[in-house]
Length: 170
Length: 215
Image (cartoon, rainbow over all chains, first blue to last red; front, side):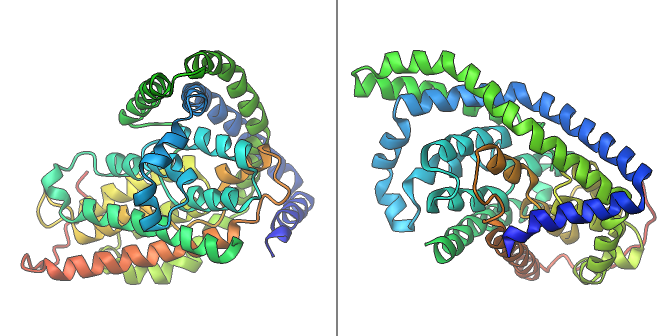
C-alpha cells in the first residue's frame, strides 16, 4: 500500500498543475525556496552533530553503552543499537537526524533495525523543545500534571513503536 | 514543530557526545584516540554530503506541501477533524475562540508543515490562555493541547522521508503505516491520560467564565 503513496502524490500534484498551472507553480516555487532556506539554517547545527556522532562512532561508544546498559535494554526489550537515538530524540531534532543517518549508513534503511529507527523517529517529537516553547510564560508550578503526562506519553509512544515495528517488520 | 530551532540543552548533547567519546577512547585504548581525531575532521565533509543529499528532497516536499496548502487541502483536513476536536476541547468550542487555531496547528503538524505549525500552536496557546480560570495555572485544555503537540498525529513525516530517500532507501515509504498507527495510538493515549489525570484533580471545580480574549 505504502509503495503507492509517492506515485499517487506525484499524480495529484500533476493534476493540480494541469488545472491551476500558474497558481500552483508560484506556490511550488515559494515552498521550495522556503525549503532551501530552512535547509541552509539547519546546516550549521547538523554539522555540529554529524561531527559529534562520527566521533562517538569512532570511539565505539555505542558498543560500550549497549554493553553497560544491556541489562536494562534486555529487560525492556529495546534493541541496544537504538539507545543513542532514543536518548537524543526528545532533546534535539538535528542530533537525532545525525544519529539516524549514521544508523542508516551502518545498518541500511530497509533492515528491520533501520525501519524500527524510522518508526521511532517519524512518530515521536522533540518533546523537551515543544514543552519549552509552548509553556513559556507559565511558571513551572502552573503546569500541573503536564510534565509527568508528557513523559509518560513519550515513553508510551516509544514502546508502541518498538512493538508495532516488531510485529510489522520482524 | 519547527526543525531549525533548538533548546539550549541541545548544546549539552554535543558536549556529552564529545567528552563521552574521548573518555571511552581513553578507556578502550588502542587506536581509538587516533580514530577520533580522524573522524572529527572527516566528518565535516560527511556533513556536507548528508546536507547535499537532503536539500533536494526537503525542497521538493516543501514545494509540494505549499501547493497542497494553496489548493486548500489544509482546509479540507481541518473541516474533517473539527467534529472530533470540538469534543476534545468543549470549553474552547463553547467560547468560540481558539478551536480553529488548534485545528490548523494539529493539521499542519500532521501534514509535515513543521514551519507553519509552530506559530499556529503558539497562537492556539494564546487563545486558550485567555480562557484560564486562574492566571498562573494552565487549564486542562491547554495541557491536553500541549500533550497532543508532543505526540502529534502524523500523516507525512517529511523530514524522515527526505532522510530515507537521501540514504538511498529502496522503499522510502515502507514505515509509514506503522508510523500512522503509532502516532494515532499516542494521541489516543495522551487524550485518555489527560482525562484521567484531570478527573483525579477535580477539587478545583471550574465555573466557565466567558472572558473575551485578553492579549
